[in-house]
Image 1 (tube, rainbow, N blue to C red):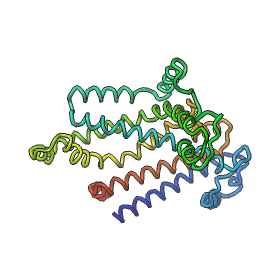
Image 2 (image 1 turned 135 degrees about the vertical axis):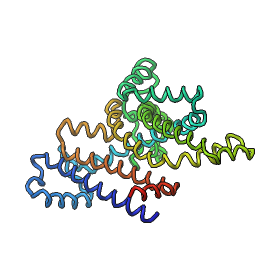
Image 3 (image 1 turned 120 degrees about the vertical axis):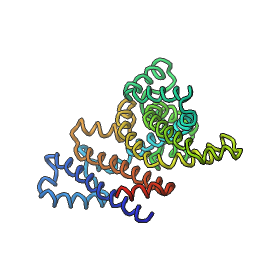
Image 4 (image 1 turned 90 degrees about the vertical axis):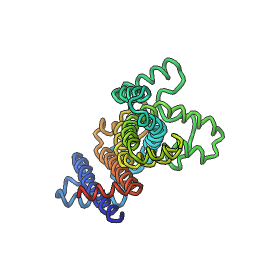
Length: 320
């Protein structure tokens, strides 16, 4: 396991260095960048030194990029975390049910709905939800993270956590308002990972159900629920855990579209504004932040899958 971890960390470091090269080239697009006055590789080394000191540069508005990033990044992470949690809550039971009853009416219905939602463009779904739940029914707010009349002290950057940690006199009303603002963007962002988790778990469960030890467990008198909890999920979940990192990567991409539609004050909206003003320093900071999260999500999912399932390590060594 130690060798596997070291190899994965080496791959992470190499990929991260390539990512810094991309960020460095974006900064060099700015005509007033100090890196344009140096040789390419010498400037890259200086760029790496600045990154290790936590200096991402100064934005076009004169403010340090790190300060702006510390405000918008937690908003995106809060949205992605809740969306992925919702995807797991919905995807695991429905994917398990479809895999256990493969070929049945329930499987056909779940697979059809999954295919239908997966084929829907995310921007169309977001606009449709705004029209129905905000403009027509008036149940949910159109945009924003919470009502600006509420002043929430920033501690962690996660709005729900900050409210719970504070002594806000209107805490219950603020929590309700934050949840109402979260519902639509969370649902829209959770669609893609939910459908993928259902498909992956359906195939994995169906494969496990065909194994002899599942048939042997049934002959021992175990109930179907006991077989599913003790044997099916225990063996079906580990192979797909490394693929969760890919779903998180997809969510980070879709978050940019979701935030722009719902005017969510996250890194997606921040990046689009920077692109419109050709603020290359801000763009490179956003690229580095999003890319780092994607890389970390992939390596942690790989390590978690390898820790739970030793077969994953053996397959990786075989490929090498």
